[in-house]
Image (cartoon, rainbow, N blue to C red; front, side):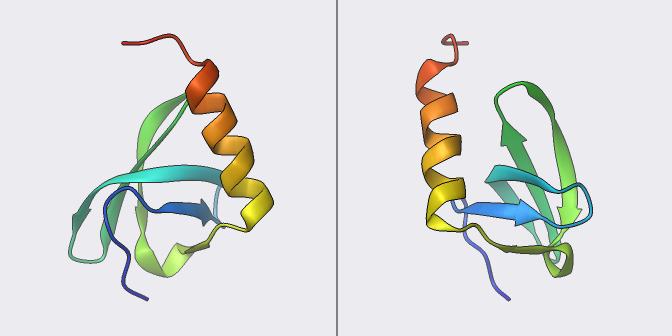
Length: 66
């Protein structure tokens, strides 16, 4: 599956939802409030559900500005 920067996905290996910050071939760089940025293979990720997207967006809005 092809993913684009800023897409919200679920990393099935970590059971964590994050926003894609960079795509390098099959490797995705992900970030989520409360977690250190991490890398995941695209094959490990799937589109987030609408509930997962809303939850991440809410956490992003509540996170202090960097």
